[in-house]
Length: 182
Image 1 (cartoon, helix red, strand yellow):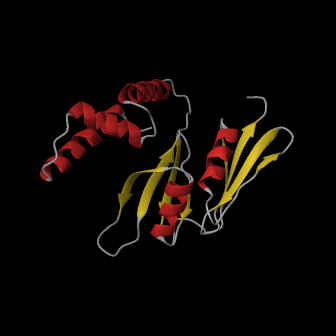
Image 2 (cartoon, rainbow, N blue to C red):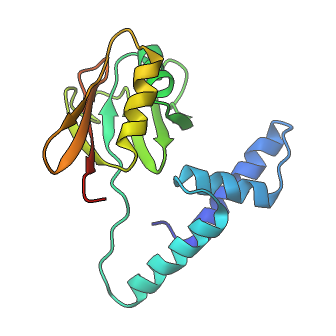
């Protein structure tokens, strides 16, 4: 995880950038936005996680943060329709190096973050990822109610877990899995 001072610097940079566009937010509001970009509910949680990570580093312990898969996309509108419209993710941020350049963006939902990229070398189309979760029955009900024309995922009992499989318009597969012992 980034250092606590980096997160504060990110908030300050956001404040300054918005001020250049005549949008004013407080430093506290900027810190809350930064926490959301890390996939957390608020600044207090991010601050605690950063302090904990720093303490672990000071102890010489090895620690890892969440892995964020990069998913190859070819059409921004189709990606938005699937990830935001169907799966219910929100766009955290988008980046392009300039006009008419490929898009690189982060979407998130319930602690899961994905990077979606139009850049040719970032990921391989047709990838497969497993996402362990809680609330898979509620997700299945939500997705079924949307009546998405390109996909009607079922809920599968695999013995020790329940699974829900979706495939995006670029043939990337996500296997949502909930162990039954949770």
